[in-house]
Image 1: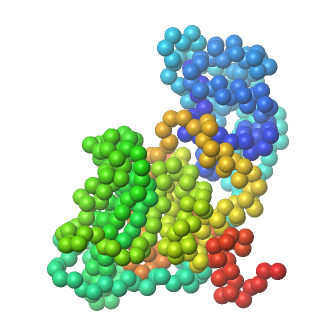
Image 2 (image 1 turned 30 degrees about the horizontal axis):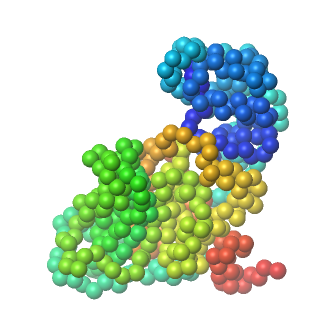
Image 3 (image 1 turned 60 degrees about the vertical axis):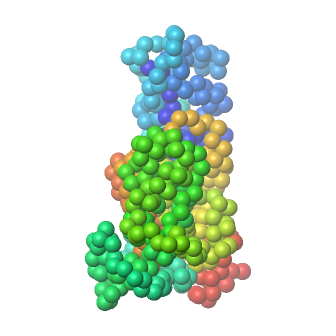
Length: 431
């Protein structure tokens, strides 16, 4: 065996004696206590050394061979270790040589409210930590502060000539059920044709969201991303196998055009104001813990935007942000920091990415699930109603895919203005 800490799990220091492997609640594990020598030794678990080689190197870190076996065994049982490929001319242990723990059995404490499970590298007290309050699905719908924001009236659309394309007949039938007033389904499909949506990110989620919106009749779908398509970007509805090596933006535009049901109009795509921005970064951390600065220009321009992505084994949809009317990324960050003071320190380490290697985890079925939900929520908004992810976030994690809806309240320390607007509505004043 060539032990390797799974590259899909980002590492961070919670404090001087606690390391965390992973970000999301479903898959993160804390290791405590970890001294500086053990922390340095963990860097050697990169899949390039067999166990014999690791035992020989242990003395350089003040560790015994026995402690190496114990540490590797405990990390393995916690699900943190993978078996890396042996390098050429490796003189370590054979691939079928497995470590045997000679120390005390590893203890893992799992609690929905206490953060990631804790693997004890030595006898220690589990450090409890709180999480931001969350709530399950509510029949009452989106937050009142979101519905107050406006921008949700059905988009106007003069009837254009021509019939609804046959590819949209099933969508028209569905809309007739959701919007029962006579002629509403056709009116909304024609309105979609005149809308502009910008999708930022052309990975497994972003490119497929763009194609779905185009297939649903949105006439102006623009995709923004850099670099070239990698084999792991390929997904149904998005970049295809034949797109590998092409520029991501070009591949996504091709997917959007193939999916579009409308006959190309003279004058090209709609040129009006952007109705919605979908932030679907290929790095799922930017959707799970978004940087408020990335969306500042949309907030200042009053353009609604929604986050979507996959991080580790967790899918994320939302929040849909109505500038000045519902919680934004800054509100999310402020609330998380209040509940978990270590959060900014860990987030800075994850964003720096010093220990990141390999391809980021993004299960294709999970990504497709995120894609469908994101597109459906976006269409609900574009058709004039507020989806449940307005001022809230949906999370669902492999393998069980139990979903959680977390309501996000506007935070008074955030400069987005949503908290002040909510206070005016309720007559609350902060002193």
